[in-house]
Image 1 (cartoon, helix red, strand yellow):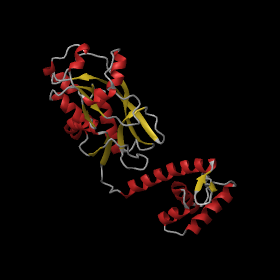
Image 2 (cartoon, one colour):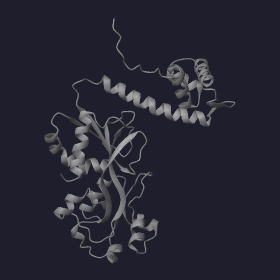
Image 3 (cartoon, rainbow, N blue to C red):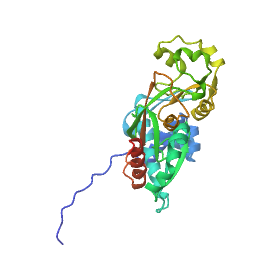
Image 4 (cartoon, rainbow, N blue to C red):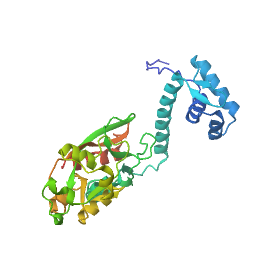
Length: 308
């Protein structure tokens, strides 16, 4: 038989998978007992696997205290890498288990963006991507894209998220908006009107809140407590928008999400300044951006943001 040359793939130099799983579970819980419950084995089995892994690596991964565990610096690095790797593996297996004919894509975004930007465009999406079922996950809580909790997301922030690929969609600015029935024209008249407040997530980079607006406008602000007490407060931006539309006061609202109301005259921007709050980004797990269904949604959202 004639020999043919072919590349030989080198074997992976990895510790046993059982030991890696045992360590990852123990590191997540900082407990052999709870790791054993998660993996349905005994605590001694977890301890044995971790000890074997430490022997293989030639360094300790845990500091074993009297009644608790603490990760060593090496253990912390290994735990971070394993957690990301297992999340990617779990998401890949989940995708393989989906029916082959499924073209469903779950898009996660905050409630305001979902209600005021995505939903009005759903008919256009169905015409542009008739073979893709778009499932909308509207929540102000971030989902784990690497774990497969959603396929794609629109997020605001820096765009620098480990394990994700992102693309900037559009910058975002917030300005004082109100109903024209208030007849508000000058910033000097603002104290005569009720201020509408909206909660921002703690991780927001540059939230558009009234104390910040007064600072950037160079206007003396009312005391924070008095400002809140005399105004209206909402946990959701959509409700703040509805209150402004109804003429209940002046709100700092997104110029992007209120573009239609500004065009129609239902809302007006009587004066500035507009506050820069960062940008919206598209994001998905590394490697998923070229899956056909995900790519279709990705390209459609990007084209809509660009006004194409």
